[in-house]
Image 1 (cartoon, rainbow, N blue to C red):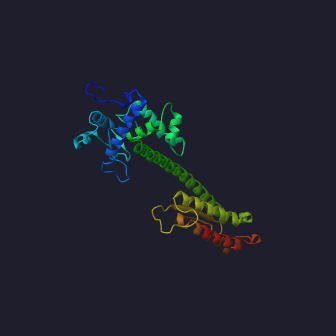
Image 2 (cartoon, rainbow, N blue to C red):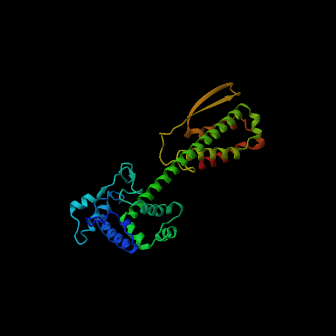
Image 3 (cartoon, one colour):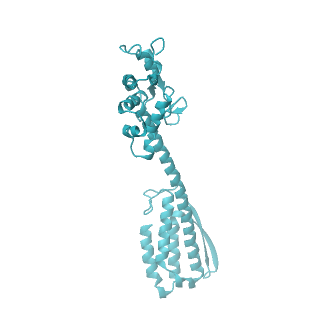
Amino acid sequence: MNENNTLNRVSDIKKVDQKVRMLTLLGDKVQQLQNNLEPQNDSGSPLAYIDPQVVLEFITTNQEVELTQTEINIATIDIDYLEGFPVVEGLPFWERLDCEPIDYYKMFKLYRNQKITDSTRSFEKLIDQLNNTTAPLLHALSKVYHWQQRVRAFDQYQGYLVEKEREKLTTVMNGRHQKTAEKMWELCEKYLTELASKPDKMLSFKPAEFKSLLVEARKLERLSLGLPGDRPPTTPNTQNTEITNIKIDSKIKNESKTINLPSGEKVKYLQEIVDVLHNANALPKTIEAQGDVQEETEKGDSDL
């Protein structure tokens, strides 16, 4: 203590039992004042915290007297939420407080970071990590330096980081889905164009495999847009309409025509092409294309 009988730092007390008693007294007072602070934000996090240093300087000389409102106001430090997370004087609330001795902060940091590598945190684990540390000391420190409020803010921030990383990975995955779906659609369109211009290719035409490719292309395209992969959207989605150019070359009529189609009409149009080929007797009877194509595409429509 100094000449005015005021204790500046509890950590300066040499005797462990005296230090724990003083920290316990200080922690109870700080917690009482903290619980009386209003208001809190929507998530229940504090908008200010009690500076234990101001309280310490008072109770070492006036333990039997309650702090005045003026003294409480001096001890109250505002917490900002400009970025959505608690910040004190430019630093996150879960970093070292201005009034916090470095040794105590290191203990808090070990406790705070336990959940980074484990699903839970506890004083028992912290005791195993430190030497000459007791549960009463940690319990007192947790009240003095607002450990529970700070680790709660830290956990919320870690959860935010995990969610942002998940969103980033989802965006990358959706991009891959979209590119793959486009390639699969291009393959289907090219294949049907060749069927129209070269009927001999129908000898190797396999409706079941073609239908499967259409289904998978449709699923990937829907997933890339955040829609269910196995069914159409419940309401029309006009904001993400994609126009597809399909060019058909036909030797039967000796003409070429390019048709612009929204992405939602692709499967319907491709089916119409197959029907036209059948009606024009371009589908060989040897593979019984009519029954196979109609059966498979009708199933495909129900899956798409």
